[in-house]
Amino acid sequence: MRVLHFYRTYSQSYGGIEQVIRQLCLGSQQFGIEPEVLVLSRDRSAGDEFIDGHRVIRAPMDFEIASTGFSRAVFARFRERAAQADLIHYHFPWPFMDVVHFACAVPKMNKPTLVTYHSDIVRQKFLLQLYRPLMHRFLGSVDRIVASSPNYLASSSTLTRYRDKVSVIPYGLDSHGPAYPLPEAARLDAWRARVGTKFFLFVGVLRYYKGLHILLDAAQGRDYPVVIVGAGPVEAELRAHAARLGLRNVIFLGALPDEDKVSLLSLCHALVFPSHLRSEAFGISLLEGAMYGKPMISSEIGTGTSFINIDNETGCVVPPGDPAAFRQAMDFLWSHPAEAAAMGQQAARRYEALFTARKMSESYAQLYKHLLA
Image 1: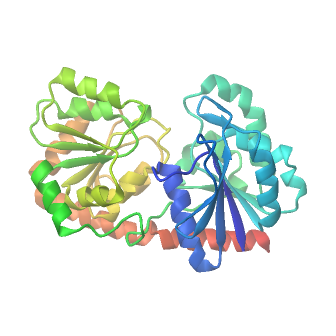
Image 2 (image 1 turned 120 degrees about the vertical axis):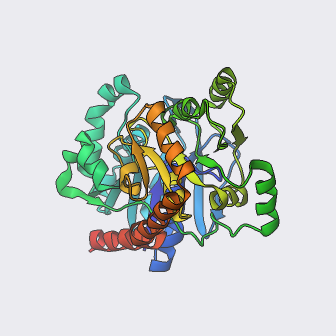
Image 3 (image 1 turned 135 degrees about the horizontal axis):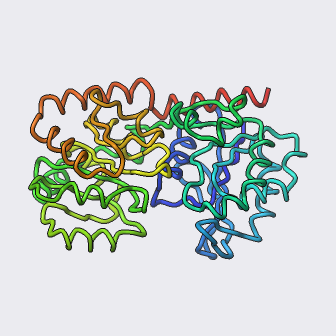
């Protein structure tokens, strides 16, 4: 079975949605699926390539407006690859994708279609008003919509409109896959020497909705180390904020290779995840913390973060945008190591029960076969 994934970007610097697509492409191959990914590329000279056994097809991006890439060349590439595919798998949101869907007459191709609904459109409220008619026409035309958690399905006004054709398949990660190499002893020793043997860890792209300013405010007046892994649009702003607060216990490491990220996940005391807006629909790095058996701190924003992290069971869930509550949760995990370790063990058990890449891939494979039938 040949499945075409269509999304706006796919690179080795994986954000949350890209990581989901990568894990799905890796995992689905063991169920007889031949995946390929069609994306746009800012590098107009970039060609097609194979990554982890699946083909990635790149069309040059012409311009970008409000994080939405546009490409004239992608129409021909999409028609070509869609004709070869047995099923088309879209990844929402990306308004230009809806345009391609109708311009290429996919509803008339008699091919099964589904969309993984990764997030509501939260920030671009004015543009959403213009896009909404096309969005509903697109969502109404696909055969199936997949939400990543029951929490998000219950809290999204858009998804509830299509409840009759929504399935819930949580994201999953493969702890033994190429994205999570076993760290070498020498690398672990090097990181212990650099950041210490007990620290809080954040991993992720530094975006506005990640709430890192809340984490920095929470760290003020405390001496426990806070390690921040990742780069992104608000990195300079966050570094300046940390400097204004005089924080000497916060370490910005920038983007790191998988081997270093895994080392820090293995070593950290707990994972902190201060996202405070609904743009954070799930939280892949939060799931990484659970996979490595770490207690977690997150905020209640009505999305999948509270499907991964259960308050007083796998960690602490606090009100969004509340540095004092976040600090209190950090104080508790820091000063109660036995309770923190027990929460981490429960997080690992929850990961094994609900969030493995195999479970996600098997669920999608079954849905693919159902749609083809």
